[in-house]
Length: 224
Image (cartoon, rainbow, N blue to C red):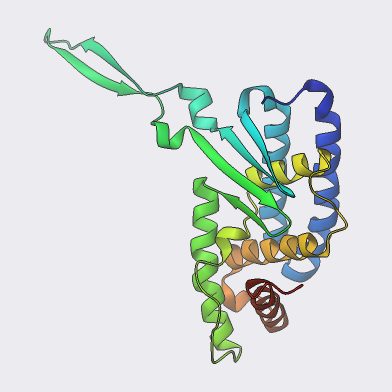
């Protein structure tokens, strides 16, 4: 379903809360570069909200979370994939493929107290680098037996789509600000951003060890 215009102010308000919660935390523990990276994602999320009538294809409540299908920016600009016949200077007729392929036209986003997931390129690149950097950092900082199963950071992604969807879930009262596990997931997602920007060696040992222990508890169905 599309988001009603009357919902946008509350949706934006919850995005602002997320920014006020995460931005100071990121700046304090990971520095200016990661702070700038995260702020850009918040700016993108705000644009998604402002253009929600065009961007949001559907929203599906799932327990204490939300699944959201978003039309990609590229699809909005270029339209769907189509074949156009054009005549060349030599008089031949050729077929040219224009527009956005179906697999790149939509992003599937899932947010809830236990994770922030998205299928966009930004999310996939973040998760891939964060996984390899986290494993290397964990070994560097003394974790000899790595007990977590990969992939790890596909569940802890800060991109403009997960931020917009998380704010929507909060505005819809599907997700609560007060859930401790959700706040820990936000912190793990901030770590993922830091690993992408700084690499594992640029993140404090205490942040890596703490996050490893939190993820280990969550993987075993225990509170963080």
